Amino acid sequence: MAGRIAGNRFWLTRKVDMSNTIIEQARLGKADSIVRLALKDESLSLSDALQKIAAGHAVVPSNNTRDIPVPCIIGGGSRIKVNANIGSSMDHESMDEELEKLKMAVSSGAHTVMDLSTGTAWKTILDGITAASPVPLGTVPVYQVFGVAMEKGRDVADVSAEEIFSAVEDHCKAGVDYLTLHCGVTRRSVALLREQGRKMGIVSRGGSLLAEWMEKRGEENPLYTGFDRLSEILREYDVTYSLGDGLRPGCLADAGDRGQIEELISLGELQEKALAAGVQTMIEGPGHVPMDQIAENMRIQKSLCGGAPFYVLGPIVTDIAPGYDHITSAIGGAIAAWNGADFLCYVTPAEHLRLPDIDDVRVGVITARIAAHAADIARGIPGAMDLDNAMAEARASFNWKKQFKLAMDPVTARKFRNEALPEDEDVCSMCGHLCALKTSRRAMGEEEKV
Image (cartoon, rainbow, N blue to C red):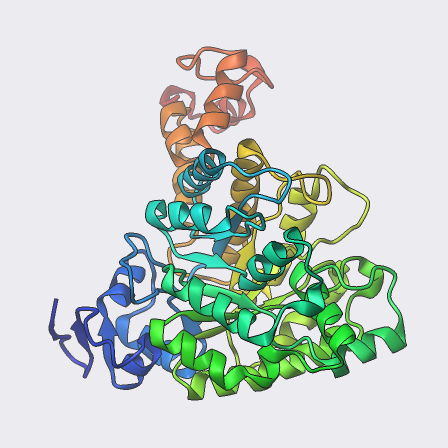
């Protein structure tokens, strides 16, 4: 589709100009068709979105080798987005299960999905997920390169820098839309972490593997020293950086230490280089953070990283709720998003315990969406409270069918309701005919409207 947008200088174009990435097109005042599609349910105007993308304040992850039916914009004042992590482990590999998890994640409302598979069948599973996913897809290439090497009995230190770069390109060629790359885990940041001391050390798989690689080889992180080469690879496929938080805190006591902040400083510097190279970039963040530190964490990230979209895991606000970390993370996620985070990675009830199953995926996505929606309302996103207002009207009129339709999880809402009373009964089993709404209307002389 092509054509001038009335009243401004911006054009819509098909995604055929492979010489320019999405961010480079935005700087020219042009909108890739994928960008227009990503704005479908947003309050952002096309011109505002292009300005945010051009400045590095928003991203539209989209590999130029495939079309995404349901793309999304992250950051720049758009609605808060939610990611769902799926993927097999070395101990349990099943293509069918991962495709079911993908289906569940998308049907539950996830805006993106990450395949974190680590076993030898990673490529088969990735290809299957890529072909089936209607939403943007992310991966972590170092999981593949180190995981396969270790399964073959090789030491982490035996993996060459060339193998790591080759893995990155393999994932780009496979159609992945954004890559988590732990480029800020440097010898200095790890040294600062070691000197200060931590209760839990490095809890990021990618971060810990690169730290071991650097320690054993006595060399700097190749993702840091070879960042320009990385950017060339990502730019060729228009893949978005998700600069990983390899030194994120894994418990409350480790939040905000020198290693975490040093890594964030490096990520801010690398983000500038990525933007100059024409590669969209977002920044990943913590982790486990006490509630009173979350707002400051968001402010520091936005300041150090030039307003780049912030992608947070949680943050989890207490360490003692295994089995309920979807809730601990939703608390932190809502606060983080209210204070500037743009993208929430879900946490499931299985966190810290086992590989998530299909129901864990559903619960994780819905819970993260609740946090994101609450933050959208608090941030004053236009239209964010429309569904809440409609729900209030449906409840006031005892319209159960409409309430189920508006609910984030209609299946669970209808199940709970119908387990107690039939759908055509106007009251619920909590209050019965002592219903406060009925009583209020009688008190206000409005009972005839019931």
